[in-house]
Length: 149
Image 1: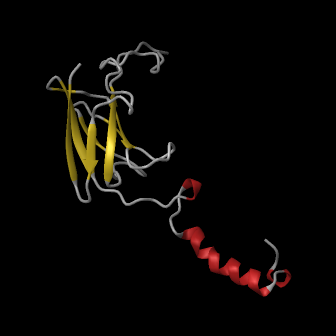
Image 2 (image 1 turned 135 degrees about the vertical axis):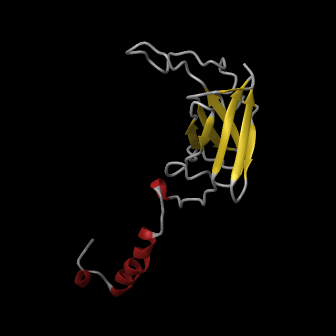
């Protein structure tokens, strides 16, 4: 940026006017953060908890293929708390396609998690083919995902 004495008055005015926009909470790519709401839940497979499964909420009402997704890893009891911007903060209100991938956690040392088979056979791993749909509403959300192998 040029020193103020080298800028014309209108240019200086515009620069000063736009400076606060740099501090308005815009995230990467210039997108403002959407408000998020707590989402807690449980993943059950054939009635039993799915420990160490990856849960991803893919927004259905956002045409941007780079749209931010809320994610979580389930605990041993199948419970999860979604995170969008920071740990356990939740997800924006809206409708979602949900994917769940449950990888064998007993890989040998040096094992490649991408090469490990999904215990669910890939049935819920693709947002285009997963039949899991959920809606996050303003306020606290409690979701149970009941899956079958």
